[in-house]
Length: 360
Ligand code: F6P
Image (tube, rainbow, N blue to C red):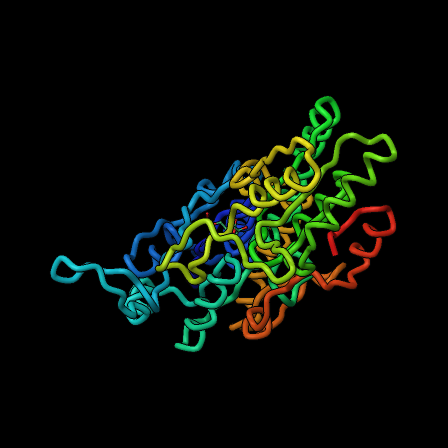
């Protein structure tokens, strides 16, 4: 019998369980393979902590957020934190991870992850591991695919938050700022901002001028609209300004954790407009909860495609959506460059056409 492994790496997002389920079910139903799930992402690969996934193990999980396998966005086998003589030091533990795969008789590995995890997957592939990647992240910043799973749910969550902020903003005649995630890409802010009828959307790809934001608020006031809704991506910054960083996580693939731009913006807006301003940081609510129907379907398609890709012997690749088809691209292409919002994207143009300001 052929044995394959699966792990979920990096920050969690809705739809992970639906992928694990699809990988396991299709591997068993279509090919008669055995599936091993590593616990807590690449940590499980290094520490050899795993469990057998059978049909019962993945039953009833398609609608559940999070990952039944656990995950971490810190552990990288190529730069792994270990304790030596009472000291914490980083070591390359990739040989150990590969040995564990060999000892378990695992012939191929499905890595469900975002940018950081897919980089690690590619490095494992270069060391001879037969890897297939599945693009996961609420940020939607992976190249070579129309969309990552988890993104649609995050957009729905942010849109729901905007709907709620709208009613209270209107009642109190306030400026309401919603800070959303997305790292260095503005996809969540852009889509939720358009869907939630925001007045201003600030994204990393279009540095803003605070005077333009203040002017948008003033213009609305002049037409009798005494409230304004602003969506700001955590990676947005003022023209000539810096990213607002919340903390550093040195052991992580990307040590920078963004956050705080919403508060900076609120101070600037109050100073310039005198209008009472409140901030909501949506944070990890965007990563939690049940996946939308779209994400459940995409996750299922990706999971089945990953198993078919293994069967076809097409390793070092990532499954990808090229609407309407699920196809594959090389991992090398997928991780080459982050997928940011093109400034001339039709949704940016459409947003501007309906009167939304980007502060540019
Ligand atoms: O990549 C997913 C993401 O949620 C980003 O949008 C965000 O910047 C980051 O992870 C937050 O990471 P953490 O869970 O370590 O706070």
